[in-house]
Image (cartoon, rainbow, N blue to C red; front, top):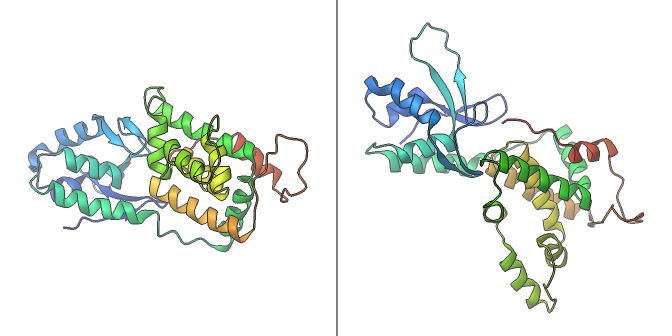
Length: 264
């Protein structure tokens, strides 16, 4: 099963509401009612249970003709969730197809020379404890805003996103003969795999900017590889001086710490 997939100006893959409605083999007569319900319904997105957000999950599609029916661009994630909640006989097949597109979205992200250089500077900034903490805080604020100002499920959500949780880290740490008592996730990672803290910070950073989970994870993996090539070490810039700290773009550091959230 296929459906036309477009790429937005920001590089996000989308489908149109009209194409989705037709592919689900729903009655044309109910298109208007169904679309209005789609955009007001509640779904379990990767970043929490919420309603779709305009300019993040969907946007009005401008049409050249004078069509009476409004069409919308829908994110792949939203389209998949709509398909699964529909009564269509082909919903499972379509949802799986959309899931494959969603999974591959973050893996195909060629960067030009300037973007690579910017990424290197961002990775260097994320070797600082203060920047790591700021990125996590911004991500949590965005998560809370999309979940009724609640962070009740924050740690489960973030664990699923990053691929590890506190219990896993405690076991891995104690297998190394180091006590995990009183240690935070970041402190445990510092013992187990220091560069993983940079990967996590980069994922937090891009999720706070409203990027997809696939894109954020792919950028996190890239960041960890860059950090390894640069032979970076994690340092606590909150302490006085560090002779091993790399030269860092101070303007970028300030930008990370005072991140202005954007919509995808």
